[in-house]
Image 1 (spheres, rainbow, N blue to C red):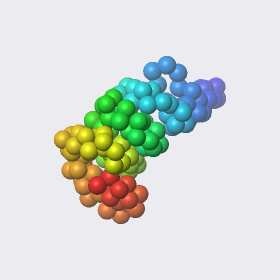
Image 2: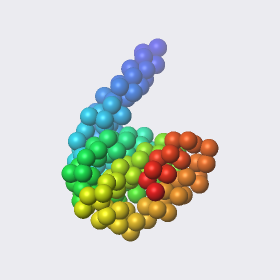
Image 3: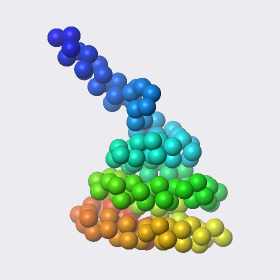
Image 4: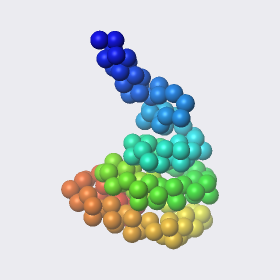
Length: 149
């Protein structure tokens, strides 16, 4: 009856990302976020694997250029992604986290070496290898992990 309709309406709102204040953002909302907002979303919703994966994907997209990669690293993105990789074993989180690390650490310009060292110090090499071992049948994890290495 009416209770069922309310539940269905609430479910539709949640799926659409209209969850209200304090609720985890939708994947679509994350894909529109800037660096600071995406990192804040992950900090606020670190326990939600879907958010961890969406933010990993967004960070990889945002870090297409050197300035963004450096800004992300300086803002703590490497450590934030590492925390997500350690917290969530789900394939999508592992894939998007590895992709984010690979993108943030990519490049040959002056700051790249520092970002790579920062990631290594944070345990990124071990985390990427662990992701690849945990998901040997996942082409996406193998690809993003191999690219990150």
